[in-house]
Image (cartoon, rainbow, N blue to C red; front, side, top):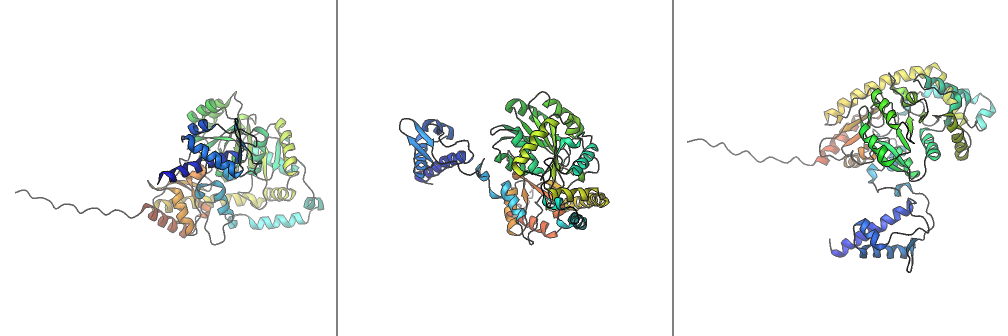
Length: 481
């Protein structure tokens, strides 16, 4: 590369950094940019490079110079662009792009990287019966907004379900929402401000990252172990970052399939005692468990732990319905936020969910689903091991396997090659805040039944590994005289 080429590249890097700060709203209209000398030190470039970048941004109209004062943001506040917040990621590991791939996939694409069950694994006949029953109901149920807290009968049912896990939450402490993602969005609006620190497991569900981008939170990843978050790292983050939130799965962790151990749960709550930290416990996979995992909400008594859940994973993603269980004084404020952002609950979705959960068909469906997932986990693990992937753990429940690729292979590269052959994979760094999971892939065992998945995966791995170098022939043995 010529010196001019190198200079242009550095100038573009500085310009892109300023553009990202404006897109992320860390630089707002009228804000003063760092001085040329200070920004040069920050970026590790020459003052000439920063001066050139500032001049070009001024020519674009993004910033403007005030003689004797410096440079200021000039452009009007741009629409929030989540993809521009945080580091630029390759498409194969960007959480928003991976979600789009799976949601927009045609019938010919295989999706072992997606996060939901195939349609024929869900209780479609029961759903149709439930819809017919709703159609015969009152006009109000079909046409009107629901109450702010949500359908009373479903809140009572959720309260009874939570009691099975030791979580004491009367119906008045339960707010129905549209989904688990809606629940986290409301809680972030309620509990944090832009710039606040939020702790996430590393790895964790990639949509947590995307949601927190929208709230312009500072995210700190906590390494995850087979028993839960690494407690030494958690304690260090509490001291160094003073976080406001921690979001986790206690039961059937996404993407690893691990479950929180009782000793880790108790120690975690001890570490949080006396700190201004709220834990959001996402319990969306509760019905996949045969034996319940300790729930932080049960141990804490819904004081500093908020539990959320949803029924889209076991019932239907087309009629989404979730809940928030929280302390009474928080439910009132969350209800106001819900009214402000969505007015009322989805009456039809809540009514259908209540109808399905109270019928005997749901119990039989869940029991059959657990057995079917157990068989699929075993079959998928066997097939993955045959082509060189090793599960991080062997989960006791759920649909996910977190698998390590052979040494030297990059999951984003494998995903790129597999996508060209019609297979959507979920590479590890999409789930990792620290970008330390390049050697992992998450598999949905319910979506991995087609042999083509493993044939394409094996071919992609072989192509990525490249030709095996041929060994030089061994020298002929020398005979002693």
